[in-house]
Length: 499
Image: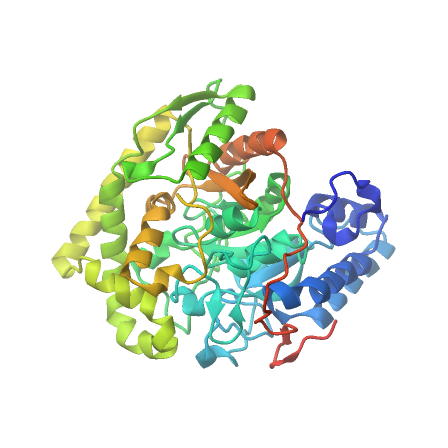
């Protein structure tokens, strides 16, 4: 039930147009930022009661920001590149004056004093935050976007399938046209999986490419979390990821990890070589996912890329062991306190996985940091030969909500399916998720992985796939048999959001 592809673009409502189209029209005075904002607020009122993706609606703030942009244009000022583009912000990323709840009851009143760096950068580029978006409680309750405070987000294509997570609210919101962009974060697939499951594009940047702030309270996270978690945008088209990427990139005193690397790197030898890995680790891939990788490979070959199937990515099994041991050893120190915040259901996902993880002592932890560097070197050498890797985001079609917390088999199944996302998060390389079509009425997608700080190569290749295989969204969501979600998002403070 997608938007009519035969409709004239000029007649489409503003929420249905690309972020680039929206921003160009606002800059050129063909539409006001206020009109674009109202179009999105109306769309939220229309479809959010079905999908429950937007949690805290920022209607008044959005109208105020839009009015400010319109006044600037009336004064003759040149507007910034994302002028008037509405975006959602994951509940774990701070928006000033609004609670950063992480979906948890414990933080429902934790009002942010300032924007997180990526929110501030998107604002500076003219984009307008229109609402917070749902996620699993504390990002720890599983892959499905179900939180203590806001309930379940539904997949707009099929309410019996998860929209993914942990940035599932952004994936669903962007797919339905409630926002032109979404801002999430990714430590093992958390922007890429919602993109693949909801039919959108997403960018997981290189470690250090975008400034971020992932503190809960005054303390910064430990080393593993510092290295793996990155913020990233979701959009309906790959082209819309570009201005978001350019706005978010660059050094910032708020985050000393962020480095001043130009958005585009030096040209690479042509044709660009692409290593295709349809079944990372050789542990199995669903036929529809394999076909999605094959379709993307054919599209890249048609675009002039040198596509070559290879046996596997470097040392995948070892990377997954390091990923688990490093992060879970760190996490085990805070788990006694965190588990009480998650509640009985929310902690099942972690509790099922903890016994299967090799915890290490201090010498073992220090040893893991050396193995991590060695793994990154192996990937760098591999990517020196193949500047791009094409593979699945998730090795199954979108699964049912909560399967990862249902039992041990479901937990293992989901963790195995996201294995390429986990490994690439560990080694810190960039990746772009891009749709490849539909199978059995559900979106399919792949990811293109690149050299460190070569997001441009990933985006260019993803654009070539998109040009040949098409864009899937925006979509009007499929109604669930029995609606189980709140009727409206809340406004900051817990009252129903006013649109």
